[in-house]
Image (cartoon, rainbow over all chains, first blue to last red; front, side):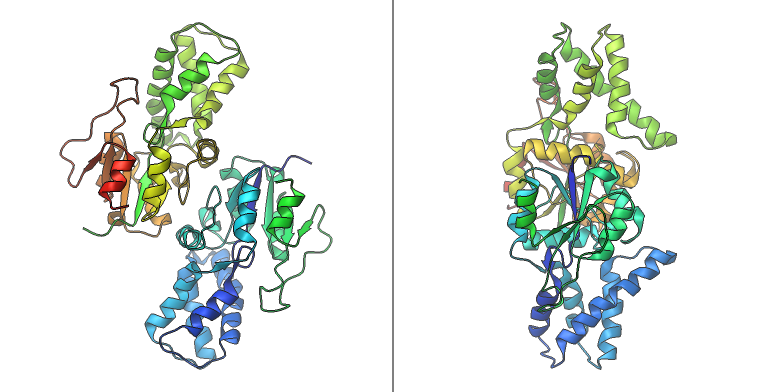
Length: 231
Length: 231
């Protein structure tokens, strides 16, 4: 097995707690709307993949702010919740203010000590820059599926990141809390690393690692991953 | 004038001392070749723009390692210097081990406190990642003309960086020690900031700011620029 030279990190759910952060933002809206925000936020997140399918299917690349505006309006309508326009936009912008998981900041520092590190997110570069400034997170490069004009799990997203890091696919690991991301990355030759995030969808609401994926490494968090990789 | 939200930094010459660093590498080559290394290094750097012209002219994008290999072989031949292949490659790779100017590291930290910061270099992302790790420099994003499949001063290089940062051109400043870079950036609406680097080509060998460029700001170094921008 070639040496792992670079680590690519999924962001939403893997490095930051989108659900808890968005629920706090919703509770704090000036309009003080009484609604089942947990259901709304979860439905909003579930509307994400179908929205990306349109882009991957060739509708033309649009950034996550644009997609989030459309899906939020649809989900709010479904829940019969009317928000002032500024509150809707505040929720869209809240994806730039997501809290890291407790191990994320220190884990990234340790992992960066022995590997090149970069994001590989469906978030666009501008959003990721703002989020990493807000959350005080550091990687060597902010990479995004945007740089391939597509979204994960399109194989071009992974291969563009590998190319930009000057590596071969086998020298790069994809770190994610989502099985589909790792299956797609492994299919084009990246090393899959699953990080458990049991709180991603609320208590007990984490995904399971993919089954039967050769070479899969599973870590409880980024600190344990750093231990495992000798950082 | 719109608020400046982001600063783009040229790298070679503006943030790091390519000449002094390459001369030290040449003096340290295992083969110990006696040659006029100052002349060779300067000629190597001068061969850079003509090599980029080929790419900008449509020969297809190639990274700086490839261009540097070709131009180094040509310049060494012109100086009748024969190096072992591993020494030639060591010099090509030395562009990943360039020293920052004394004010660069602290200046970038201060400037980042109030602005989004990114590189905008003709170096490719992989080279810049390695260089910033070596030099212990931090910006929010490693951007490169590579992301527009071109080289500066092609206007697409600047506009792609502005787009990736989610800004309008007037919200972004280009920081460089080279007049042509700033003239090109200003032509597409960026704010030009000249930083003096009087040692770039050896003692007294720095470029002069462009003349007659509206809105030009001139700083002696990054610390003075941070003072000026209130960072």
